[in-house]
Length: 288
Image (cartoon, rainbow, N blue to C red):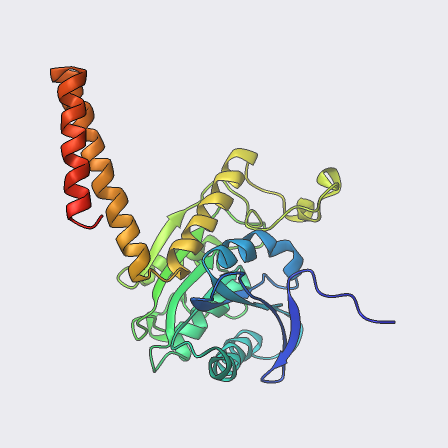
């Protein structure tokens, strides 16, 4: 009997690791890894996948099995991300890639930047409520034992929540940012739960798989989820010359509309209309 296709994308073995790859409908502009929380299915991250596809990213889903291997798990996974990239870049011809990770996946994303970015290939990192525990790599009390994030050229954004019952505030995203204030930015998702970035099971709202780690209120969970999707889009999308031109045109048009409305309010309809006509002529002559 044929195996059903994975809901996330196409399954593939790359550099000896099984991944699931989803491709955008438009021409891809980049490649982003999506690293799950420990032993959480990729099917719980479809909203993040869709946000990345909307940013014209090829999405490489990497399920983080926290039990295999038992030793050096996080560092092994970080090295594996780099090995997968080294193989995929020959297929897709991109020079840089991004990584989005949640929980332990967020920590692994930071390890990729700290340990495997000597060539500046990492464009951006979004670490969603990373958990720097078992072992501690970035938030040891003895600073000399910490890995540094200053050696990467990647743009690094970190979020933090009030976390699950197992997430220590001494080793969460806020703690990582405090130790690396010059090379990371922080988004405050306080009062949201650690699992707020994941999708709920449809039809199982009262028996949600999140119940075991429930925290945060509904309003903050919803805000944090939306804010994370926007952050991911901002950090991973490639701004092409066409997009820059389009954004500039919108900005100029908005300024002119504001000025025209102001003139209308002062001088009345006819003179306001004349100002608007003159503005349109200016836009046309400028090629906008």
